[in-house]
Image 1 (cartoon, one colour):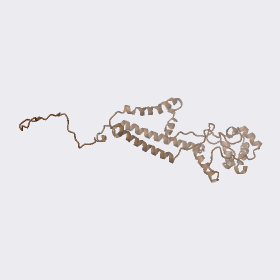
Image 2 (cartoon, one colour):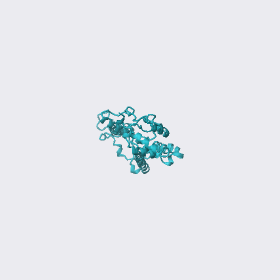
Image 3 (spheres, one colour):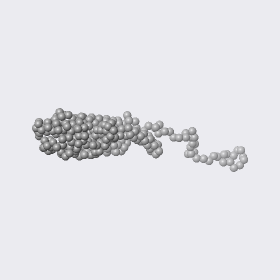
Image 4 (cartoon, one colour):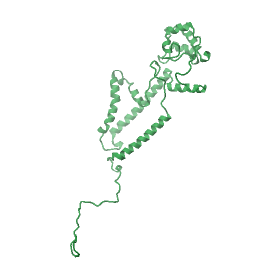
Length: 292
């Protein structure tokens, strides 16, 4: 530091060599993707990315829900033995898994707690077990393989469950409730009656209701326990207007051999051929047009 105007005076600069000169050319730090294996700030970088992905997935899910609404069935009826229960599509793989012998019967505890609980517990523990810094999936063989096997298993079990359900419907001759509602609604609209509402439809009157021979046979076969005291339907379908749906020959076959894998039992050992023919003849007359 100079104190005088003497040009020969020694000038001394006071400073700290540990203070580095700032590089003004680099305004922002490099992106974290430039450092493989490194992480990035959770807030706001990572959180914002996750929110954007969540919004895209949510919008896609809402579009699917609006385009394909959940089917609406009939009110729950514990007496309907022909009903085949099915869970929502995202639980089909667990539903199918619980059908296997090692997940039911004597192994029901393993099926409920083990096969369904262990995968979710493992998913929760994954961040603590897989602590590697590598983010590329092909360099994480164990985690990538487990995820791939899980996705394939879920897809396969879902397909098997749905395929088995459709086979059961065809085998038992059952029309799914939401499809039956749609068909009946279309028929009702075509007739100018508006949309069909379960429980509000007009039940056809019985033709020749005072048929003593049929009443005695009906009592012997306990038909009212499933079809209702007035044949309006219950656990089984309504028999009023059944002549519009089946011919006499079809009714004889149904009464004799049963239908729906036991839903309608066989009466060939309980009723004689003559009784079965009388019942089928009487039922074939039960037509909505004839009752008006």
